[in-house]
Amino acid sequence: MDKGLGGPDEAVKELGSYRLLKRLGNGGMGVVYEAEHRLLGRRVAIKVIRSELAEDATFSRRFLLEARAVAALDHPGIVRLYDFAFADGKPYMVMEYVTGRTLLDVLRGGRRLEPAGALSLLWPVARALDHAHQNGVVHRDVKPANILLAEDGRTLVMDFGLACLAGFTMSTSPDTFLGTPDYISPEQVVGQPVEARSDVYSLAAVVYEAIAGAKPFQGDSWIEVASRRLYEPAPLATRACPDLPEAFARELAVGMDREPGRRPASASDLLTRLQAALNGTGPVALAGGRVGAGMEVFSMSMAVLLAGLVGVAGISWLLDGPALPVVHRLAQLLGH
Image 1 (cartoon, rainbow, N blue to C red):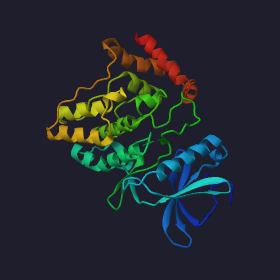
Image 2 (cartoon, helix red, strand yellow):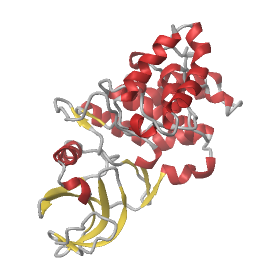
Image 3 (cartoon, helix red, strand yellow):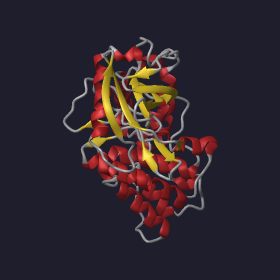
Image 4 (tube, rainbow, N blue to C red):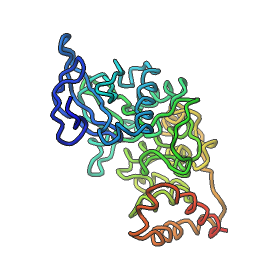
């Protein structure tokens, strides 16, 4: 086997019992290929850990965690795992091969979906997340790029690469966070424990973008986006969609509440509330999680101040993660 497997110029054409056909894409920890079983002729997707990460025990452990997480799940809305094996000491997963496009592809260019259509599209995602949560798995990285709209009509959740099984302790520092800054929950930003409601927050952020054509929090850098998420209430979608029912916008804001306990308990509960508000059959929700009038006024300027304090030279330090709690504490002190 060529040692460059998983790199940009991989020359390997076979992996175990499979023949690699073409590269499909890159994930946070691995490269995904379309492949075919040499004897059975079945098309599959194979995810191989990146060469530069294969020797790192932390990343290898995380890759195995992904396999265990997916193996514990059996749901039509989750890409199925067929096998997990090693080749020359490098782990790889054999998964269901599904053709289609992602929700990210659909939303490119700020395209908006009708609220009813967006909810209909995301119901399979909500049920898949509920199934994962019931089996002790939190996805941690729900976003449009991880929602696949299959050609056969299914909507599936992909890439449990950041998922954590209940009872499994990862060796990463509590000061670091995993996920995509535009969608992760506030508790993930500051390295606090995650639960089902963390995925609920991310799903609500996806709904917001789908109907508003923009992400709920904007900024010139990820630290500005993170600070807005920490210190500002979730924006009402009616700002971008004035015709949207006020009750719907408020329910959506509750789904992105900064306090996990105030969010809906499950992904299905979130969409049920949104559907009721859209139909005019649900109560008007009041978005909570406010931290005081002074902090409300302060939060916008705080986000800009943080970005200014960071500067270009400090970006790499912040990206390493340990600086984030310092920024968090600074904001608290200045806010009081």
